[in-house]
Length: 469
Image (cartoon, rainbow, N blue to C red; front, side):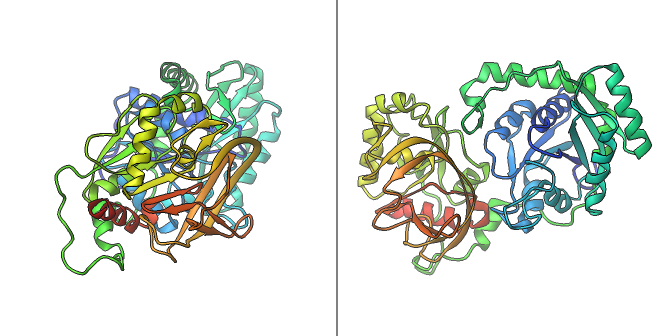
């Protein structure tokens, strides 16, 4: 299978009429199947989801990246795509929810259809055919004709019961003029367990995840026409924008009004920004580390479940999202690291914590001692808090000056009491107007997940605070 070496990267978007249709199985299986044929596959995910990109990375051997038109703005979708797809032979983009489902109350914004248009990419529609036969043609016709700017190139039928069922579905779609690129049988099961926030991340079940991805690849290889899908990917329109570049955007980012004029400091040896990882902290965007590196930091990962000390020379700390509630006992038992984090915060060094990081910095989580950096308690609940947020920084912090506007995303089943400190991190409008998060000394802790590519000055400010704290 030979891909085009000229023009834009061949690409296709895997979409579905609704969640649960099989997008993740098909997209991940396609990535692994193309990679097995010797292609460099660039994996992408529409929306803010952190978990699916872990499976994409496992399938492709490249970093899984998100394309979120709400968090980053529509203008950054294609540049971020081209950045992630550098050197790739083909790109596969997994959609989110139903194809036309986007940010609540914002029309098409951040939907799979919106991103497909921004990428000028053809769409493959994954259809759960388990409870229909001839009606599938009406369903696919509706999705293919709803928005003329979205090009549905064909379908992959999922959960097909038998040869006879497949024949009926193919006859219906032939009459509608829609190509069938693949058929996956209902009996095939792929072991991808879920819990309260979706699939269990790869980092928590590495060996089982490898087996699951291999099963997806086998399913897709046996059931889909990979040559035809590669041909569809090559039909994507050319993109005229330049690829996003961390160093370039930092150079163009607005200056920090609190930083004196003059040349920016050169990178000093030993300026380490430690970034939490491991099974408890799996939620991060690759662009954050790239921006920190471009700003002059040496980004060093560590695992709060296993490492009893912060990396040597740590001048700043980033703790992203994940599942600390699942690992509360282990995190609490690692008392040396908890004390090291508290001691670093006490010096005034910059600490940026999002969601799981916020919980880790609290006094306790579900009754178990955490770092005690924040005078707050966290606990699990049954209620799901989920959605995009418009936010404004209400306090000067190591990340932003007061008044900085950013968009974020919340996704958790925990609560922190109190919900904001004396100096709050953000003011948010949805689902109600409220203050949220904590700013104290160098600490910025909040439930809000943000994408720093939308405001690259955040990374530059953080690293400069590391230099001066």
